[in-house]
Amino acid sequence: MYQLNYKQLRNLVYLDEAVSQKVEEAKSLDLSFTDKLGDVAPFIKNDMRLIWRNKRTKTVFLMSFLFLFYGLIFFTQKTYREMPAMLMFASLFVTGGFALNYGQFIPAWDSAHYKMLMSQSFKYRKFLESKWILMVFMTSFLYLLSFPYLYFGIDIFLMITAGAIFNIGFNSLFLLFAGSFNRKRIDLNKSGFGNTQGTSATQFLIILPLMVFPMLVFWLFDKFVGGNSGYIVVASIGIISLLCKKYALNLIEKQYIKNKYVMINAFGKEA
Amino acid sequence: MITIDTVSKKYGKAEVLNVEKIDIPTGQSFGLVGNNGAGKTTLFNILLDLIRPTTGSVKNNNIVVSQSEEWKNFTGSFIDESFLISYLTPEEYFDFIGDLRGMNKEDVAKFIAQFEDFFNGEIVGKKKYLRDLSKGNQKKAGIVAAMMGNPKVVILDEPFANLDPTTQIRLKQIIKKLTEDRDVTVLVSSHDLTHVTEVCERIVVLDKGTVVNDIKTSEETLKELESYFAL
Image (cartoon, rainbow over all chains, first blue to last red; front, side, top):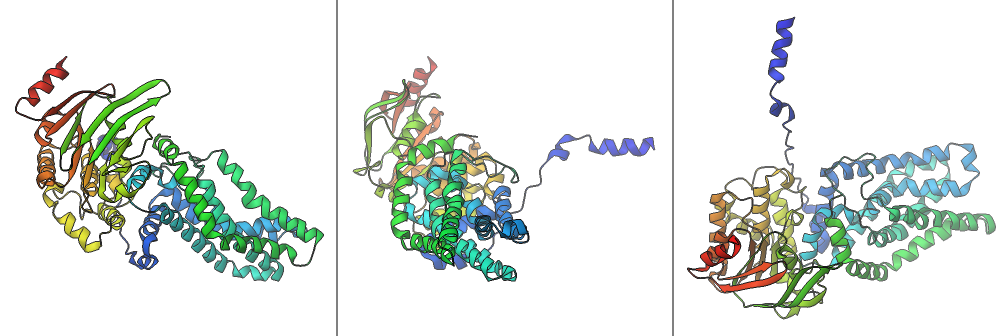
């Protein structure tokens, strides 16, 4: 017994072996299919790798699928069924999981190499557009996955549809805009779950227009106008925003360029 | 090529940089030396419009760097690790930079192949992310990326630090070759006087943010510099 124990410990006595880290082997996937997207392709490729190769972003990505089930909590309970505003809240979450969780930290995901980006020649617009495409694509994808909610009736499904349109049209642009106020660096190598690095007052403030605003609008129209007006208005806000995308992106781009030095400085500080 | 015109930078009341006027003609290899905190990195950051100077301005090929972005097309740089993307492999990183600099995959591969010796087999084809490479190897990748896309200006901050002696020698050859045709302007900063005197034809000494010496490199330069810093 002693012999066994001794041998075992003897083998473990060299610390360097015990602490030596396994270096992850890099797996390069061929992402050339994104080349069709033209100028934004390099950024899209980069973002896909960013999401998949870092713990925190991976968590965000996988969490967005969990958010799909958020509706189940609300739609199955009677108490909520009588509170349409709460149902709207849940509907926004069903498709918006990715856009909300990923979008609110744009461009802090790139904070570690922000300086390099700022010294390269590309139109800032392309960088922003790549993030926008990513959010819109993921929201649409989650919307497709949300089709089984038809089971809860056409009303719920319409609500999710309105929520998805709102997420695509309004929220994705608004998140980009809000991103220009991000001043906190994110270290991608740190773990994902429950990591609040990069969170600041901005994150709490943006919840208002993102979630509370559509809920309020929906509630007002549903209560005082009735019929389908609630869905229609929420969806129209989304569609109108989408139509104004070009104008909005101009504005957002200006905002980012204006804040350039402050952001570089803030992202350069180790958190 | 580059004109630094009465550039100063203040943080609060502390002045970290105050440079009157430096003109760097096209094709010059320009060295910047000074102790820690002399303002070398700050000056380079201002050249790249990453820090806004308190007064003065910088012109790169007659373009004021803070007013237009045109200069970015012909300026390559490597300042620190924040110029790398940690979660990419070196190949992906070169492809990304190449994309931004208008090179296609074949261009990039051809360009990278020239640096086989410099990389010493430790960068390409290793299936490692940049974050898992050693400091020295990270630096090699960053320096090479700064030279991608035929830049007219290359700015390297402390390129010799963290490199092994063999790589330092190879880097010196690369820089010399770059300036051979008098076409590319190279700006290098360093602590190491020997390296800069070997590579650069002109050396500016910064101390506490001001230029204390501006010399054309010659036989005596190293001695002159050594005696200055020996104080």
